[in-house]
Length: 62
Image (tube, rainbow, N blue to C red; front, top):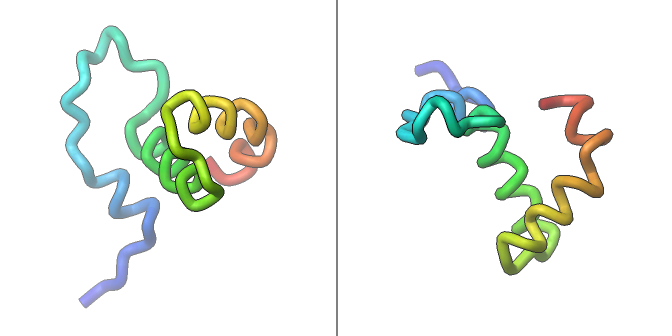
């Protein structure tokens, strides 16, 4: 059995959002959410602040 990376698992999740309102791919949103929560984010606003403050770093692997 092949072991999947976290990114491969997240990319396999079906995105049910309306395509016209999608700015970022779902797997990228999910990984940012996960990283923000691990770093202590407790609200959507804090997740947003995390994503914006780490944008350059996140861009190196997303």
